[in-house]
Length: 429
Image (cartoon, rainbow, N blue to C red; front, side):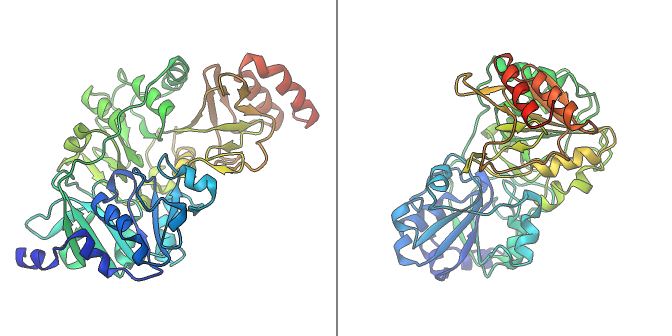
């Protein structure tokens, strides 16, 4: 086994020899990206023509994030983050709109190419297995399609249980690194986020199963749940907020009705403490996103609670969660997946959370109609609870007029009069 391993070892620069012009390289979400390989690709990008790097939530602004060399290597965003947002807004990074849960099937059906996989991985075990513990997501589907699979093996990557295992026989080349895995701490939480967190937490019952989205307000909700009991976790991202709930005893997964006793996630993003907690932990399973985010599967958890953030909500309840007008800001991600899962769940609750205003209180985030060009993320027929610091609007089953009244009531007081006037003009009040 070790001789076979050694035969596949190479430097990051040597691994680039497996690439062909026109290839699409699939890279896992966030912390699962392999920095050694991607730095090497950046340094040697002018060797190639039309290489695409497809990824959700790039964490580092690699050298190939360069508008002058996109003919050599180009980023394809499945979700924009801080490293890739400017490139997307300037138009020289590509964007693939998709539900997170459906990315594996898009790869399986050759609608999203997957010629090469570059991924971080845990060290090999005695059976020849590596764990893609930080990002099983769509990468496991790409493993089955790719011509070339290159793993960056790092002892700081935890092993994990679940469907996140790649065998040595599947691997084309191995590079080794030992730099620390990138860490992301909990965001700062202000009084607005805290107020929203308390409103949502008051509606979450003991024994609920949680999906926590990415962002400051979902994390603010987590901070309000430490006194709850018998919570479970079925989510896309495991982060330090969920770790805090495990450590205080609020999460034990004992009352889950789908995979009881197990926490389920598809990618991890947090601190070293989180990665240490994950290591060979039988309580946690990491699975591909078409398993974790499948609304039918996640919805088999009774009392499924989904908590996700938005940028703007109109008076029918449509959510623009991923763009600023026409400019991309993030992506669809798993918001719709888990809203639908919670709606299917017996006793489930789906929360869309957002501050009532933006730009230092000068702009209302509750609007008569979405700003022209806004990418609609969660549609009016799916949205249930919308929460600002001023209250909770419950929308499913309500008439259009009732929805408008409920949303105006949770808008910032400075904007309620003009919202009501606008609602009358569009026949919603």
